Image (cartoon, rainbow, N blue to C red; front, side, top):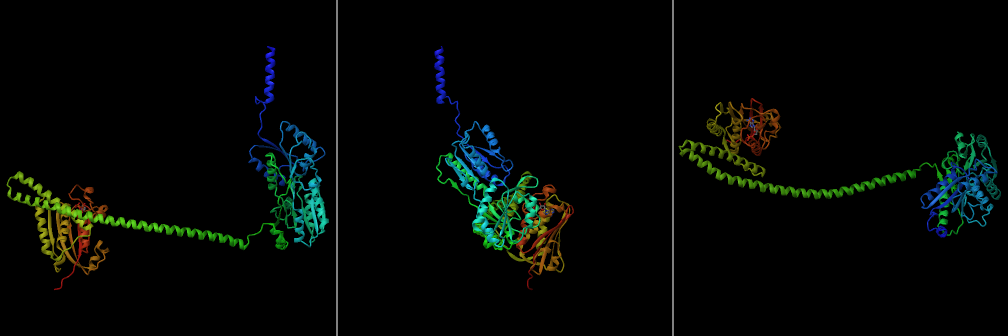
Length: 631
Ligand code: ADP
């Protein structure tokens, strides 16, 4: 049993040593430690961090850890050891693949502990140091983005822009970085001997302000990095401008300044750019790529404030070739440029609209031709329909006439009362049918514009008298015993009218039939009168007529019937409109008579209208032009 246990134990050890059980999880992530010399809120290093993390955040498989040394505020002999203790405890379980250090203190710290377990043999990437010669990177796999603040170029340009100002005051703190720059500036001053350089260190904000205010025509100033303000907070130098309310007599330059009112120009750092570069070097190293150039330099950017340059009457041609000018007002040229673009846009929009119009016009033309074709087809089919109706009406009328004729004969010859009754029905129905067919035929002729007029001299008194007589016979045969018919012939009036007798008969007959149909009692009067154009115009609706003849004959049929209610008056002449169905029982008819009469009168050059009072009666009148005959 103990033997079995022994083998089992050996087997487990074997599995563990070969990692067959997978007890040690493999970590695909690469770990990066990024050490920042300063604190969050320090402008330049914040920018570098932003540039760095923006690349790491979008790269797969990277874990990065950030540590801030905060050396601007807390720096003494114990800072490094304390910091090392903290991070070595914090990261004891993490094996870093790369160490990144930003600015001098972080680089110094790394070098102080380069043999520690965290840093030993780890590729090292740094940024923010200018004094590279002071560093010993021997035996260290170190890659750097060089701090190139373009100080030399800036000082050259300061002297070029302000040659008479040979006193340069540069303001700094006593921090390590600042002291390195102090050296650089000193060596520049010695080498080129362009002016006197005065180093002002560790002044309070108030003292700096009064110092700057005391400077004169031969002076200018350079503010480096940051300073403690009156509350003890570490702030960029430009914050002192919040407390300077009138413009200084001297141009002031700085390395943190862009767009700040009161500062004439400076060497702007591109922190984000440097951060990107750092991250890219780190990623290449992690991927095992070989990097030939171990030190790379970012571009520098000299920037100048247009308003300040103008205030000191500086000739802009003296600026460095790549200078960036901020706060420059829009020039007329650039305004013109904008105007030009606006105009260009307008012109393009107009061209587009014109093209659309042309296209839609061709479309419109197409649609118009299509519509015209459709209209022609419709007209053609309309005329086919009309001639069809005309033909069919004619064909119906012929047998109907035979029915009416033979039923007439039957009525005369047959004495059998019961049979006579049937024949009367046949006769009456056939007459209604004939009227209907005639109306439909007229309608189709009117629509096809094929009404043909046969003009002759009509002797009105006899013609009308005959009409009345005929209707009188009809009336006597009907049940309307209380109705009378009367003809009124005017005195001293012409008696003849040159017109189409059949059509005149049709219209008057229609009016009389209606008067009989829509009246129960009273006298229906047919009358005529010849009137001058001027007199016609005084008559109701006819006044809107364009009367081209000098004389007209007005013919009226007056009844004392049911009349027409005000709200229905507009529909009287409409086709198939039967008002009585709405307001009074059924009187027979299909609602075509007045519409046809109106069309006929209009074709004859006249007009028809009516006046009516509901419940009291109506007067239907029409006029026809009178063409007097020469006697
Ligand atoms: P219908 O065949 O119905 O008589 P009309 O075209 O002759 O058709 O007349 C149209 C409508 O005008 C009639 O239905 C009727 O309501 C009204 N109307 C015509 N003449 C008179 C009248 N003399 N008195 C009252 N209403 C009339």
